[in-house]
Length: 258
Length: 324
Ligand SMILES: Nc1ncnc2c1ncn2[C@@H]1O[C@H](COP(=O)(O)OP(=O)(O)OP(=O)(O)O)[C@@H](O)[C@H]1O
Ligand SMILES: [Mg+2]
Image (tube, rainbow over all chains, first blue to last red; front, top):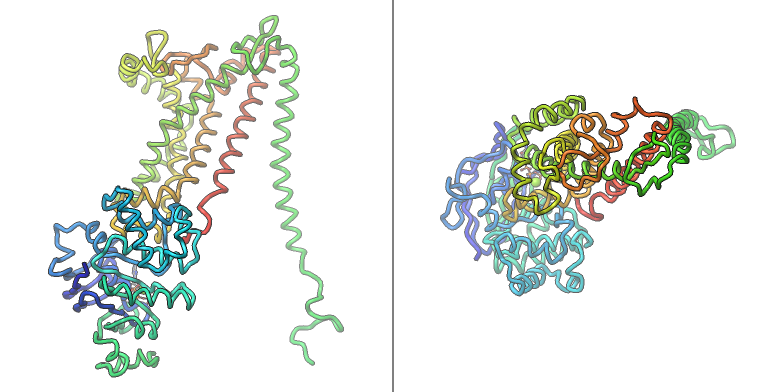
């Protein structure tokens, strides 16, 4: 079940350093939202705060609230482990479990959730691999290690692993930056299909990619090194790229960013 | 045509002489060092063989199958059986005890301890390796033996049906079990330190792969850390095993040695190659000395094989093709 994500005055810290300052936004279910902005402006940090992966870094913490359909994922009685089982994540570099087979990689999230029934596992693995457009390529070697696939296949395997548990939201941090153009297109097509089922948030440095895959774009920037990153504006992708409200956004999307 | 660097007239820059002098000098040095090590090793082996062969000729029993050690009797009768058996049993026992503890310590330091605690704890474990082995020997004899007697008696009473966990004399004490425990403490630091380093090297991408799926810390360790560290832990274990095989003085102190085939681990008695050499060398006659050297040769070979195994395991390290 896709869910709405709402950031309410979210600030992110690494120790004493305020990396992201006071971000508020609403992300609608079954939409694709792109985070864009210059390097170091805090896109990854915000993304990782949305499934509580931010706090895995020693000393890292957040202020503010993140609501998942009205439920605050940072409420004191909420366990980060449960948040991560509800909000999936795909990383910049494909990171399948190298010693696990393709099947076990995809089944890993389900097994964490206590699914043991073999028929159920087989059915979900096939559905997820089909969903990630990888089924045809791997159906004859499900027992082989996931590390034996190409980079693009590994990334689709990671997407299959993330969607196997039917997450409410899927977070992707530059999922194509380590891939060739053909694998990139394959994943972009996949994102377009996945948004029928999931709320998707994707960080990208590729403007064309943002225009191709996203419905809404959020532009972040940073005033200078040591300064916190800020959300400048968020609007429909067509508006951001054709007629943004802010001069800074226009400079960035047209490539005049200094 | 003008050339930027002064080249010999008529010669392309590509064909100029190679600048190999410093390179060659370093090469010679490195090769020399390697050969020195080989020469020392060969020297030891030759010395052991030369000293051992005359004694082995005097042996009226089969050296490899005999379970007795009477080299200075006439006729001389001795075999490596009892000693090799005791050496392997104590070292294995040490490994069985040390590995879980070492892994626990390493995992705790790498993943669970707050940073303020992790580092001092790491130093403490490393410090265990700096304690002289004779201290471990006396610690085992004077502290561990009396304080573990209750436990040993209890185990012997309720588990003697397993045979292995029993005692044949009705008493417990200076047994393989005690020696194995002391050896376990001695090899703990090396196994724990290597495992800890490997756990700290588990790539962040791998750890986050598990955590982002909603793995708890233990599940992350099971799925990301242990598979990554498996071969490293195995070679750490084999290194620890090698150390336990060769440990001399601590075992010589804690074991009340005899030349019997002790199959019950809690029974006093038994012997190891290294301990036997330390304890009997000063009283040994001519054949006895040669026999001890022959036993040393066997230990040398066992240790060599163990280290080769450790190397082989370390070489097939992380699975090929993994993204790290
Ligand atoms: N583990 C960390 N410890 C301390 N500071 C960090 C850490 N990770 C990121 N930062 C800082 O937080 C700020 C935001 O970083 P972040 O990685 O979120 O940027 P980004 O927008 O994702 O950049 P990029 O486009 O290069 O990926 C930067 O100033 C960065 O130096
Ligand atoms: Mg980033």
